[in-house]
Image (cartoon, rainbow, N blue to C red; front, top):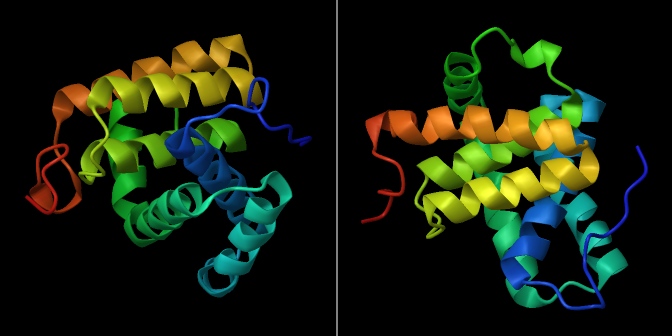
Length: 163
C-alpha cells in the first residue's frame, strides 16, 4: 500500500494527524501479524512515521494514546465490530478498513473526548482517502451501528471512560 499524507496546503488538525499516524502504525502492525512483536515495536514505528511528517507533540501524544488503546482493547473492539458489521467478518474486510474501524471504535467507546459525529466523520474521511469512496459508506454504516449500541468494552457507555 502506498501512503500519502492527507493534509491540504500544509494545514492539518493535530488530532486528525494523530489519527492518521495511528492508522499507519496499526496498519503496519496488523500486516506484520505478530502480536508480541507489535507490542514491543510500535513506539519505534510511530516515532518513524511522526518524523516523516513532522508531527508536533500533540499529534504524537494523541497517536500514542490511540495505538496503545487499540492494541490493549483489540479483542473487545473486534467483538464489537463483528456484532455491528452484519454479513461481514473481520477477515472479509480489507486490512485498511478493518484498521480504520478499530481505531474509530476505540475513539467512540473509550472516552477520548471526541464527539461521536467527529469520530465517525474522521473515520469516513480516512477510509475515502486510503480505501476508496465505497469504503467511506461501509465505515459509516458499521460505526453508526457501533455508536447506536453505545456499549464500550468493560460495559461502559460510549465516551464515559474516566468520568
